[in-house]
Image 1 (cartoon, rainbow, N blue to C red):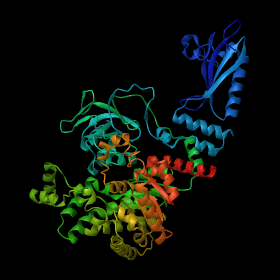
Image 2: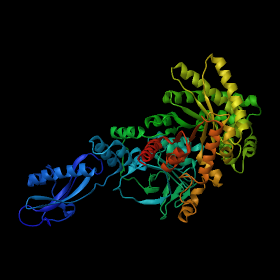
Image 3: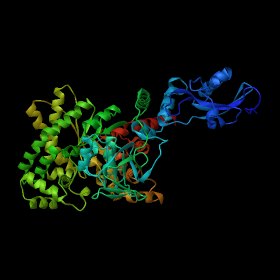
Image 4: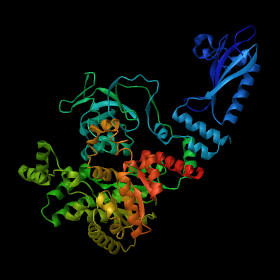
Length: 639
């Protein structure tokens, strides 16, 4: 036994060759004379540094030969064990003895640097480096995080819907968030639940907190798309939006302007500000992801609705846009009024006149996306939401709208009442609206094609993909396709230009999966929207499921929240039917999924096995999907 006690230089210590937090090369550890085991780490002032250090004495100065031998043993252990190791050692009468070696504890960013350095040093292969990093761990590199050592004063908790953390002042409306942004103040948008009207507030907020909702609620989906920390379904807190108060689980009352921290990674709401760790995307990250891309065998696109989203998608090496939700483009102030005029129009001519005001703005939107993506595919989903979402719900808002349109308030309330539906998510939206009010899709198709011509004039070759939402029957596709073809023909003639495009559908109803063969005959691609498909398959509202889903999972009704992890049995069976029947009717039809499930390893594994061509997810989840796909491909090769 080498006890580290006795005459001569005796003691014990711990050494590692890497910084556990950064992953950079650094001799780290302590040594304590006349000690055993790991006492050096708790030795306080009596412990000394290992390398020479201006702050105090070191083992290198006290016993240089032992220190040199220690570094040699550490390097040998790293090479032989193919891992960064922490070494426990003893010195007895000046002689070095290695007692133990354990894997170095590390942060996510350190883990990435460690595997890249091991591969670059030839100790492990690039493929093994790719296999060593958990895809989920990449989220810690892409977003600011609460420091592991930070003190947490927890006010309440909910569902961790969008990773990252941010500190800001509480605001209870999008208008207040915009006002705070104008003053340069970070704000946390607090709502019972968000709606498309809150988009502007979400764009300027530093985080979002909602009382209701689940992993695929509006706040969660938009939060992930924006890279915005988000906690939803925080029912442990009491929301008094009208009084502008938030009551913590312990009874503390927070008011508008009070500072909180939203931790979207852990689902916690913290009092005040806490210590943060900044996001890190350096050359090591890009090198690692290039190794992953060399292995994967399924495409990864991004869901992107704005130029900022598209730039983020391109930054994260997405292979195009798999879903552009055009309805988010209509909530800007200058577009909302023409949209409302269109809703109140009495005939097709008046509707068309109102939409002509929106046309140049839509065309500019699409042209900017084409410019950013520079030839990568862009899949644009035609207008999807019900029209009532564009009308004010408050009495004051209705009065303002009546004044803007120069009509009686009674006409406004009557029109709003006429658009009311018992279940808007299953009502007149998507293709149903496109067929009932065809002027909307006509305008969007024209904007897409005119932007395509302009892009071509700038030297950008683009083949736009037009996606029809909420299809259930082939006749719906036939009707929309006929009008889109007519618009395309008109634009070609007007501009003396030729272009091609691809028309597809978003498969998000069970019937569309069952009749995928009929539908595929008229389309170039089928993109399965697993959020709504899960909702309709289960008969379960994705916005309300968060209230009881944790209890369902706890009691084993579901193994996982089906809105979080794809249900490969029930929903998966519909997907498989859709794939088989779609490909039987049209062998070259392109298949994808574009729901929030798309970045999960389990979902990607399912898609690879089922024969999908690509998955599309939020921009900040693209690297996660790329790594998961690479690991699955490597696992298949290894067997």
